[in-house]
Image (cartoon, rainbow, N blue to C red; front, side, top):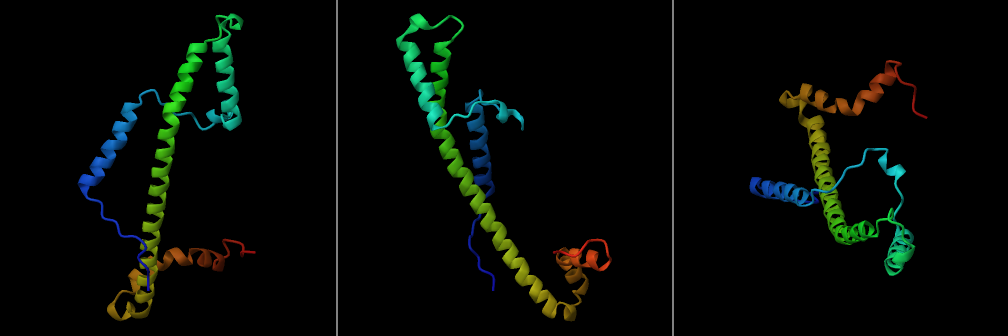
Length: 159
C-alpha cells in the first residue's frame, strides 16, 4: 500500500501570491546579476578566509589613505562589503526556502510514483478483465523499453 508522505493543496491565490513575492523580490534588487555558465570560474572565491582578508585590507586602507593611489577605489570596496552584508542573510533565507521547495517537490513526486506503482500492480492484476490491457501495456512500457531493446539486440547486456 502506498504511503502518502505529504499532503499539500495550493490554491490559485496562494500560487499567485508566491509568484508575486518572487517577482517583487527580484524587482526590489535590480542590481542582481546572472553569470554565464563559465563565468564563475573566472572570479575569486570568497570564503571565510577571503572574507577576513578582504575586510582586513579594507580597514587597513581606510585607516591609511596616504598609501592608496587614486586608481584604488576604497569607497567602492566599502560599498561592496555593505552590499555583501545585506545580501548574505537574504541568500541564506532564499537557500532555506529553496531547500524546502526542493524537498516538498521530491516528496510530492515520491507520493505520485508510490500511487502509480500501486495502481499499476492493480492494473496488472485485474485490468485485463475490465478491458484495460492496452492501457496497462502503454503505461507499463516505461519499465520494459530497455529489456525490449536488449531482446532486439540493440543494446549490450548490462554488466
